[in-house]
Length: 153
Image (cartoon, rainbow, N blue to C red):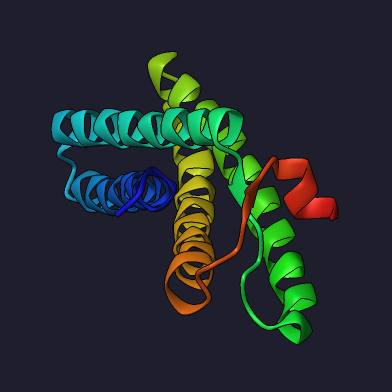
């Protein structure tokens, strides 16, 4: 497996780990296990940060992978990719906001934001795994190039 294949697998794995930890954290807070919830959610944030570092490093130093599948599916893939990018950006902003509210002990707002943030995070993880599956498992073979070239041709 080359660096072009291993880095996307690593970054995707970390976002999945993050989403699983968010689900565990949610279950813990429902059971009123606040200390365990806090530790698991910090671990989820760290996993998301590792994802971001690996993803950005790959984007900067290697580039992103172009669509390698059938040309007639490319427009659908790009629409899905734009949706995923917007969702991931919203999820990141919501995640930072939710963590900040928790650390400032503004728990009423943290609870409200947390519910929405978790759902957005799960959707982001699912769409991220879908993008990975399309680019590296179902339709491998796209060339690696800078992200703007991938998005705008």
